[in-house]
Length: 259
Image (cartoon, rainbow, N blue to C red; front, side):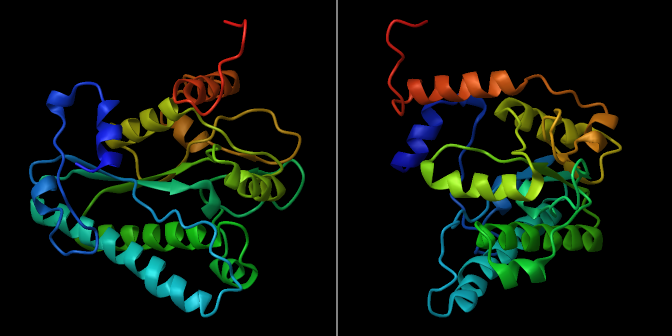
């Protein structure tokens, strides 16, 4: 395994139950061996090229050929492997709050049905525009393929994840659109994926934002909650655990003289 893979695997508990396959989303059939015998597929891969300048020469054509087409084609290649396996009963696709439209007025609620207009994204090229297009187009292609081939597919619309200082502009962009920065604990995000994988009535898109009082709009998880899911962590847990992880991994200095 690569250095990156070894670092990831070193943190995994229960390694005896984990199998790692080498695969390429751009290669037809590359995932066949990995998916054979599986009942559920979690599709979480996406291009994270957030910072391509719209002023670069031939930016739109480069985005189409180097990001959007490979992302869509790769998603379909993986789903074709699911069809060939014949054992996959559900696909869970990781979507993003960036695919949602902004609130229209103070106090309004945004949910998974409020899709962002792609024409506006192409025209205005906001922060993260490449990622927005990649997630929306790959998700639309996935739902279309699933309908045509009898696959049961649901998507989880995850909120914003903070970390690297380069993402500050992205957080500001999200806040400007929604009047808040939607949050969810990583454990709740994982639990929502597992919940939807097993929920018989799950179909379509589901928001996964920690619902809280917001002075402006909020991103609703009502559809997910109505299905029976419950969040296990609040905003305090999210902040405490995020800081603790940064300290554990050496990104922050331990607070002197504090527990």
